[in-house]
Image 1 (tube, rainbow, N blue to C red):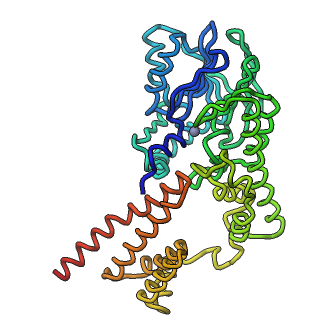
Image 2 (image 1 turned 60 degrees about the horizontal axis):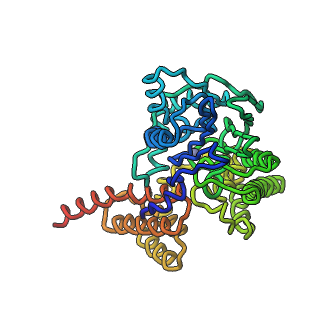
Image 3 (image 1 turned 90 degrees about the vertical axis):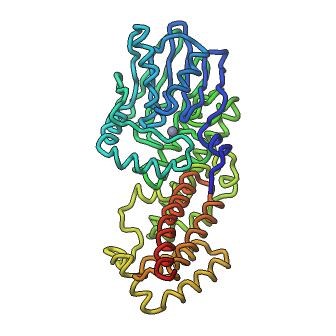
Length: 428
Ligand SMILES: [Zn+2]
């Protein structure tokens, strides 16, 4: 039921900080890495983590250097990359320093506006997605450190500072406001969430459209640089030309594969269900077993959804029954007229014994949705569903999927408790 702290560390990169590239660059781990380029004229910071971790990365940075921050670059507008600014601003005010320039893609500002419009929804969804986090995820879309320099469309932006060249490239990938930084003098790429821990987070079940093909193109563009170091948005520093290339090329391969194979099947006139199950069957061993593509956070299955959704509408079965479906409760009630609840429960127990957990859930849902009386059988059904969900969560590897499944089990808890109490008061 619990996601181990070790796994959290692997997923989000809570790890010791790194200094590299002749002491010029630093990686400060938080929830969302902070990349630092130290020059004689001051610091260039690539991402400032999330609100909850702002103080941690600020403290760590000030143990390394006391130079002022001159530029902040946002890899993208997600809350874990540009909302940890508070302690940095406090310091600037205290010391009377000039405010740094803040560089972001123009879509980053649109993203902040969207977060403000959908603030309550985003608080809810992040509580769902990060339910197992020890520290609560603080989101404050109404306070942002807004960009002062905008990169538009797919523009490239280069500036010189402190004896170094800062080349910034804009991409689509996890988001449509992604920037990555290339420091040619030290051969370092700061990748943001175009490189995270495990499989790219490209088809998040709660979030807007993401872009697998563009992701592959971004990896290929990064490969042309022959970088010695790659600073990911989450997780450990990647060191060495060969390793950097290995990581980038396998991500590109995975993104190209999932994109091209879904597109091929769309052109063959297939619907989502068929495409999805075929795709699961043909997932190549090489990609499945790559240490850089483990489904720790995002997953291959999510990515299939992302490609389908990019090119297709919401009608996804090809069966007109599903175009304007009846309420699932009403459907379940009709099913229970054909075969009664005890029969469904008996069948669910059989499929459970056979290890068919997903089918078991479908059978149990007929009882849960279709039963109008609150009785002992419903209680047994709810308990069994909770058990199945916990078993599924144990074998699920994606952080996001595990949290969704565990949340489902948690939501059943008060229902089970309440029903137990009611039945007890009826039959003391
Ligand atoms: Zn991130």
